[in-house]
Image: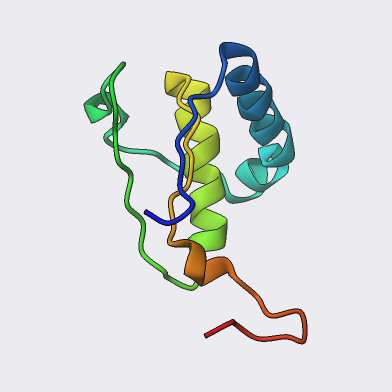
Length: 96
């Protein structure tokens, strides 16, 4: 893939990222009081792909899922996306 390179997080970077999520989203977790079901089906090790949809509430649901995966399983998720989706022209708008 164009410009894509995977680099595993070091244990220190993984912990720092997870703890940062834990702090940032604690208030949202408290406000919404989410219930997570099926965490027992998430493997303890090895690669896992979590696929989300592009729903209106994805910004709210995703951060709660990221926080809970770190808290309960020690998993720090990393996002994948085609770089073309994130290219923005300096004058505004996407580059075609």
